[in-house]
Length: 321
Image 1 (cartoon, one colour):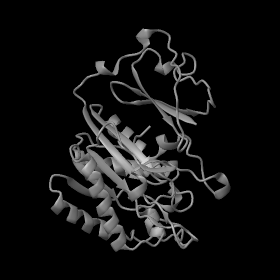
Image 2 (cartoon, rainbow, N blue to C red):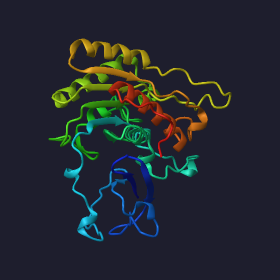
Image 3 (cartoon, one colour):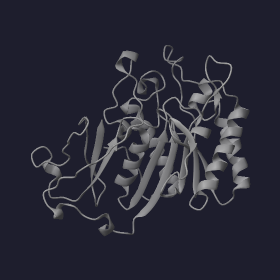
């Protein structure tokens, strides 16, 4: 499944968002004079996203009316404030959808409907000169901490503290290079699955500290901010009586861990974000995984936190496209 957006190249207004499954060696049309007349004769920035997890997109040919239909990215204004953010997360971060058989709902555009993408679009729309790109590495069901494999007496199930550095999901060889571009903002959105697995606060804090230090060694030359998102609330056991879920177990230990990191890495700014304001059980499919509307709420809260941290001048509203 492919999803794509078309944004006005000058204002960053979202003009179109669609998805399609072209199949192997298939074709798909992004701009058509009849189907998308509002995209004709205007300069657009097109983003194509492969929604399927752990798959590969290979583009063989791009067909256009004429060479003049394309504009070299180098010709765009070079005064944009560019922030490259790397977000490391789990199923919620990548827009994972439960099957309808399990009580889930479709996430029509996959990651493009997930809260990191929602936040990115909000930031760009409300300040066209502000350019934040959020790259996301996320695995459904992943915890931060590596743990014993369920039902066995030996062997470990790799947590993100290890899996992040593997070359592929199936090959545990260490990846020689993690990214061609180094992020200035690192965002860690893990802990929800660790809580469900019964990881202790001491263990979580120690592994979180180790994970951040390993990433700092790799990206130290570019890192300005490290953000840890507090774990997402689980309404599963509280939906029946309407009571709110308790505060995430790791909230306090995250704050204490970041205080330690501030003392040892004074050149980097550390932040804890809580992006759960306004979230209710109705915004989830199963008490935990957000619906499209839930991702909109998380995305707006996330955008507001990023806006404050990075001093985006315009106030953020509620439009995300």
